[in-house]
Length: 337
Image 1: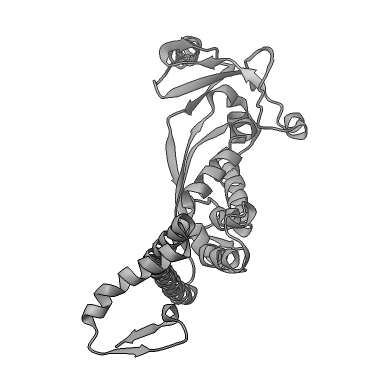
Image 2: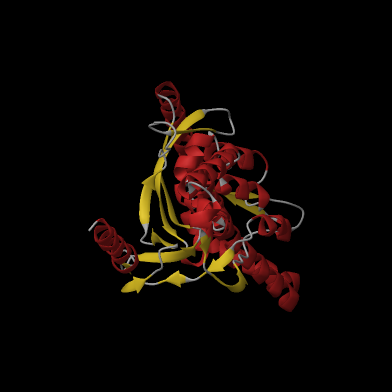
């Protein structure tokens, strides 16, 4: 009897271990990797490659391609084999996540030595083409990715410059003192620059973190940095600076508008004066042309006759006529007033 009980127990154990626990399924949002005696099943001599890694990083992150088991089942495995299931659905996590400590924000230092808090989220998913790095490359791949992301973020914040203010100087759109004033108004304080250019910061982070799939087996889907919050005293100072800058910008715009208006009015006044002068000079020029034509055609006698005839309307309007006698009658001058 003891022998039969032992054999029966052994049969139940083998049946449970080999046949019941040997069957497994993979959900639609999962992928599985099978290991035999702790070694993952590989796809021949194929290795993970990534164009975003340099030569040194490619030698360091040299991972083999594994045989990935897709959704479905039931699948069979031997007792010496183990199944590692991975959720490949896109997930989101807060930037403040850290398994070693609790924190409410990520602190970073700007280029003008101001400490600011950064909040946001990142969306990520497990790289199906590099499950070796995620399952066996590092102990905590998500922790490594978060550390890498925050290191790149802090480095970018420490060297961030407003591209709009920089382009005004580089392209030469504004010259001299106007360029300095424009850069001062647009670039100014680095925290203001960061707040105005959050989309550029997010794009930069996504670009710099494209190699995380080859490094740690996690692909960054999107960076969503939503807040740049300095300490309260710094925030109040920034508010005062922003108010002053806005007032200065408004005053400069008003002064430029007034100057342009005065210049326009001056140009119109000059045009009006020029037109009036031309209107007064035009009859005199016409009269001179007529007199020159009469003299050229009929001589001096015709010119004197024309002048005498032109005086007749004036003599009709005269109240008193003074005649001065001279040695010659042709030199007689009549003055009317």
